[in-house]
Length: 142
Image (cartoon, rainbow, N blue to C red; front, side):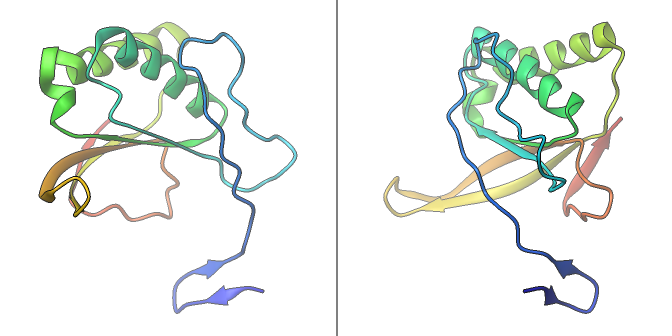
């Protein structure tokens, strides 16, 4: 069944999830049998140098496969320079591999009663986002 809005047509698809080892040399488990948009999501992984670099490597891999990569980061990415290390490694790998894709940072707020967060600020990085998607509160870095 298709859901129609004034400006969008949503066609139901499949959702597959998997846990991925950032440090593995095995390829990401991205389906090639479907034409659906691939989306890779990661969060709170920039707080340590090796995690930040591993995340950058996997983000490049996913983008090279055509996936939209969404990475959420709260203030832990600012500790020990993890976010800066991630961005630096991402830029290095893009140059090394000769790939380029759009990077869009947005700001958001997360609320959680269980974690006692009344309003925790987070940054969300969108890599290789589809061009027909509008992302609010954007600052674009090409």
